[in-house]
Length: 162
Image (cartoon, rainbow, N blue to C red):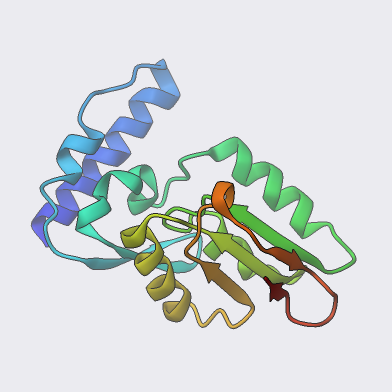
């Protein structure tokens, strides 16, 4: 528990120094390697599983800070201002920083995430369950090697066909 606290504190200090002085400290990945046990954390009102075997994939979100702040700002603005439903597609979903968060938006009817890395895929599935995301589909498949078509037919569930 103390390691998690110290890691989150380091991430907040890192982000403060970077946002104020544009200085990137070393050690975000290095210190994440000290976290050897899985745990649940919260980011943007969503729960995520921290999987130590892919600890370097999480970076700042463990401390509640977006890894790609401009992308979050853009998606927040777009998805909060839609007056119709959409299907959200996340290729390379990783640990779900976008897929899990944006699957909860009212305008997102369905979401599909592709993640070929086995451990990230497993973590995504658990995070999906933690957030009760019945409208989210996670596929363990590299899009480059994909030999199937996905049809999004609103308001039906996305259909995967060989």
